Image 1: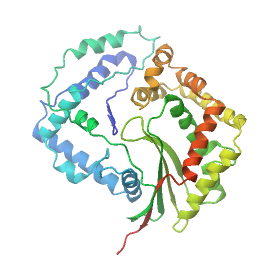
Image 2 (image 1 turned 60 degrees about the vertical axis):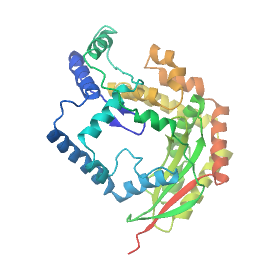
Image 3 (image 1 turned 180 degrees about the horizontal axis):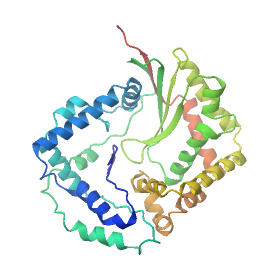
Amino acid sequence: ALTNNNYIMYYHQSIMEHYKTSVDLVLNAALNDLSRVTEEEFVIERKVVSNEAKMYNSNVDNKFRRNAARQLTGQHIENDVIGLSETIDNFSLEDAKELKANFLNYSDTSYHITDDPLEMEIGVITKYILSKLNEFKKPKVFVNLYESYRKDIKKYSLKNTVEKIESKSTQAQNVLAFKFTDNITPKDYINLDFLIGYLNRYAPNKSLDYIIREKHGLTYNVSLYQDFGSSLNESIVYLVCGVTKGDEDKLIDLFKETLNLNNREFNFEDYRKYLKSKELKSIIGKLDQEYYDIYHDYPFHGTSLFKDNEELFAQDLDTVDLKLMEKYVDEDSVRSVLNKICSLINKQSYSLIQSIDVKE
């Protein structure tokens, strides 16, 4: 299974002749109501999950970055997929059954199949899934915690401040966040996604990796990425980087310098070459059938990207990413997104958290 703040995905991979086993395993995991789980089984699994939380939280850099992201956006400390072991240890089987009932009562459930039409007639697996769904009964209706949460939801509020929090890290950890928009469109989502990849690694002689790592040697890894906020349309961009202690301010200066350099000297012909490399990577990647897993995420992306392009997804998965690129990416759109990022950063419309040593 794969879990994030917005959905749970149950999946199984197998060869085509075992498709019924794959379907059975996924549906049994996703749709059972936990009524056959014993207290002993539950306690054993709870201990596994508790130890997973302890493992992640014992990594000081990982813990700092996750906590910083929550603090930057005003979230509760436990608004985290990993969770805290103290909370997990007090989670009961009855709690689990109630949570699972809410999950099973939630109507927004989708099923995704990647198969080989040369091996089997199209629709056979879909028909089998539909026939198996009848075997699972809906649980008793509980108060839908998720719906209650959605009604009370508040947008992330970035404070536009620089804060320091203690960490035992041997590096100076930095997490910067800015809100790109409260309601991102499919066009901006695609362009921002591609542009972030370009700025991270591929802008010739002016990428974050080149300037911060190769030219100045500040870090082993610098990462800029897009994530969704409290609502799935809310786009938050994070910069995460650990540097030698004392280089924190230089990192932020170089980050701003890199963005503004790209904005001033943006060359769409260079960007075309980057898009061509993405296209070739996509084609090569599809030689491995596991590559198709990336499409299973699209319906959960916060924008209306999937709904707006349902016909493209239905027509041909081999070309849908290239068609989305062709539909949404153009010079004006890229420049607009880049200009907006620079404007936000230059106006210091961001929040920044940096680590300081733990006081003895």
